[in-house]
Amino acid sequence: MIFLHDKKNNLKDEYEDGNINNIGINEKEYGLKNDNNNYLSSINSNQIWLNKTFKKYYFNYFSNIIIPEKIHLREFGFRQFDGKVIRHLSFINSGELYAYLLKLSPSDIYCSSSVYGNPKESMDKKEWLGSELIFDIDGKDLELDCSIKHNYTKCFQCNFINKGVLKRCGNCNGSKLSVIDIPCKNCIFFLKKEVIKLMKFLTKDFGICSKDISIYFSGNNGFHIHVNDVNYYSLLSIERSEISSYIMGKGFKLESLGIKADKEKKFTIISKNKQFLDIGWRERISKSIKFNLSSIKNNNNDGLIKHIEKLENIWNCSFQQIVLNTLQDLSVRIDPVVTMDIHRIFRLNGTINSKSGLVKIVCKNIDEFNPFIDACFYEKLKVDIYSKVDITVFFKGRRYEINTGLNHIPEYVAVYLISKGLANINIKET
Image (cartoon, rainbow, N blue to C red):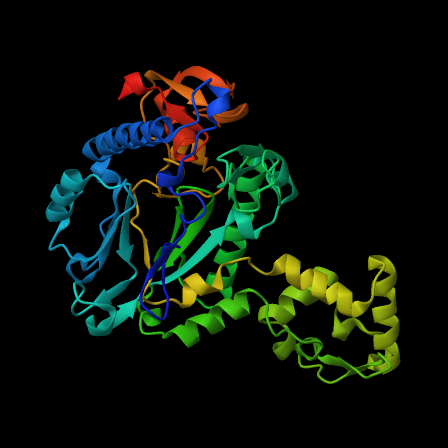
């Protein structure tokens, strides 16, 4: 998920809560004077060093970039290290893109999921021809308990970095805050779980061939799933929204299970058609809670009531709540706005996410994928950084204990911490 278009066609992006340009520094931690010169100096040094490091990645690993089909019909966009956004660009081939990329050396590179007759024109003149079907699974939408412990909260009023997820800054009591995601092993596990659930929906319920589905680590704290089946290219926003709603389990009713309840919560059978009940959501929920109309004794409403009472005793809640809990567990937590927006531009596959320094990379084996190994392409050479916090991170199979203040660490760890806004590069490195 990258840019949204509002009614005035302005740009909003996912970096409003943590843009590289908003990297702060708590001067008290380093014994620096609290003045604008020191603050701006740290920002500029970070930008210069990251610019150099990102450029080195593209020079060495341009082959990682997956050039989309019909590149000449795609819209491209770039975010520069000073925060400026350039979009409505088009390239004839990968060579032209490579030359432009090395010349501009952007912090982020985006490409449209849609193809246009006139990709360089404004939105109303682009002539939309179709779009891939894309899903976004983001860690923040999972609301995991562990994230409260290992994430950080940045205050925009005093630039203080608070440990944990807070509603008020612990330093100045300010309320203008943003969360800095530091996904852990548990976070990645549950993100993968959502991806696997989505794959089952796409292949089983929608009949999409697995070879037409690509899974990408987003480069930060989530996954993008791209469907390249041409049968879905022409779908408009409302149709894509309906697909999202189905996958999220919205609108599911008890009647879908072949039963209904009256005002007194008495259940009656309305359908015993096995073919009707053994598909889609009906099959998922029935199998999960072991609800089987065909097994009901006497095959009547009295048998149904006894069957439901048995389930309620096992689950220790009402049948309606059993179904609701199961629905929530089996549904996929995707961002529906991303899927329905046919004019959105996404991070180009194989490029760096400036919010983490990691790469949006294809996951050939979702079970074995480890972003802190597979999406990290920087060198082992060590550099000096000033960390704003005490933090433990795992990269390349190693554990790194970072202390507040000066640290001598591998480049790949430094890129991550600086991109997250948790550290500043030692100016000598620039």
